[in-house]
Every structure is written in C-alpha cells, then in structure tokens.
Image 1 (cartoon, rainbow, N blue to C red):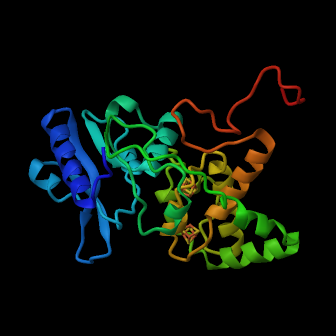
Image 2: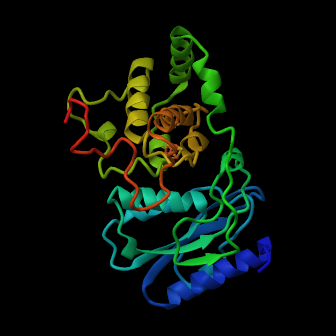
Length: 283
Ligand code: SF4
Ligand code: SF4
C-alpha cells in the first residue's frame, strides 16, 4: 500500500466518520474543520453525515482532539476521535488515569505526516498507538536524538541563573490556566488550582503565585507528560513550559531507564508505582 495523499486521507477520514455515525453507536466525530483563515483549522464535532464532509486533513490540523472526550465522562453513546500519534498517547494517558473508558470511544487513527507545529519535528510516533481503524500505512517509529538537548544546555546554568530565568518567565504569566486546560495529563475532575480552600492556591497573577502554580502543575504531570507540546502552544505569554516536564522526563530516563508517557493503556507512570520489596525505607 502506498502512502496516502492528503486529499485521499481526508476522503478516508470522512468515509470512516460517516460509517461510525451510521453504526448508531457513535454520537459525534471529533476532528478539524476549515476556518476563514487558510492557515488555520479548528476542532469540529461532526454529528451528521453532511457535517462529516466538513472534516479536513491538512498541515494545520494542530489542536489535540483527545481531551474533548473528558467533556462527558459518562456518555450514553461513544465519541469518535480522529487521532494522530500524539492524540493516541493522550488517549492512553487518560485511560491509564481512569478518566475515560475505552468502550466509550471509537478511535479513527490516521498516520500523521507532521503538521505546521514545531513540536512535530520531535515526534517519535507518527502512527497512532491505539485505534479501532487506521487510515494510512503504519510509519516506522523514529528516534529524536535531540530530545533532551535543550535541557542539557539549561543544566549548565548555575542555580541562580536558572532561578532568574524562571522568575522572568513567571513574571510574564497571566495565570490564565490555558496550559492546564489543553494538557491531556491535567485531567483531574476538579483541579486543585480551582479550589477556594484557604491556603491551597492564590489566584493572583504575580511571581509568587504564578511560580507555585507552575511548579505544582509541572510536578503533577511530570512523569505522565506525553510530550505533545500543547501547553506551550496555547500559552499566550509564550512560556517554555514543556521544558519543566522534559527535565523531569530526562531525570526519569537517567534514573529508571528509557521512558515515554502514554505508550500504552497499561503503562504505570514512572513515579506512580511501587514495589513491596523496595529496599528504600519509605516502604
Ligand atoms: S507536553 Fe504539556 S500539554 Fe502535553 S502532556 Fe506534557 S505537560 Fe501536558
Ligand atoms: S498558559 Fe501561560 S500564561 Fe497561562 S497560566 Fe499557563 S504559563 Fe501562565
């Protein structure tokens, strides 16, 4: 089978979306549709065969589709997702975190050719890792040798220089929570940052509160991050937030061996498991 053209892939997506809706088991198909800008698409819920013809596949299909499944955690019918490799890792993340049930999803996987998104240059999984139907010929997995290069550079700075760097970054943060809202690993039903209990988390957009928020979020998602880059992509103030989780992933790789998040529904996050015979005292 030869590589599918963009037009043929789009046609196949529409066919599979229509088939899914016609089965009667699926209430909507989440993919992308065109906008008035040639270089932008937006997430789109197709609920009828006619709407399926509005689904598109082009270099600007950038938004993640998986997190929309969290909008209804107890659905009467399945939700179908058009998913690329990164979206499939996001699905695995949420299945493993027990936030979604596999039987509530119908997954239309598409082998991805990379999008107009800098993170795609670093992608190691262009073929979805979980799907019900796959469009395209499975692509060979690639190793991205530069995965931790920026972190290694950053580690050469002194602690004071690193503090100054992040202080300047968090001075820019407007505490909008866009990073959390887009992140598939940020999937708690109620985020600690939204709780009004005294002492949990201030809401002010100042350095101290922004840093507490950023640091807490980084630790919360660090070993579960799937490296999709959505947090950075949506940040209106352009904070290099993914650098924090990449640093944690680098340390995890060095301490525990090769690790990537979201590769399967069964995988235990590196910091989420324990062994009863662990020699450390905390057991
Ligand atoms: S890259 Fe950012 S948005 Fe994606 S899983 Fe990691 S922390 Fe979340
Ligand atoms: S998206 Fe950017 S500005 Fe908004 S809370 Fe996150 S780091 Fe701050």
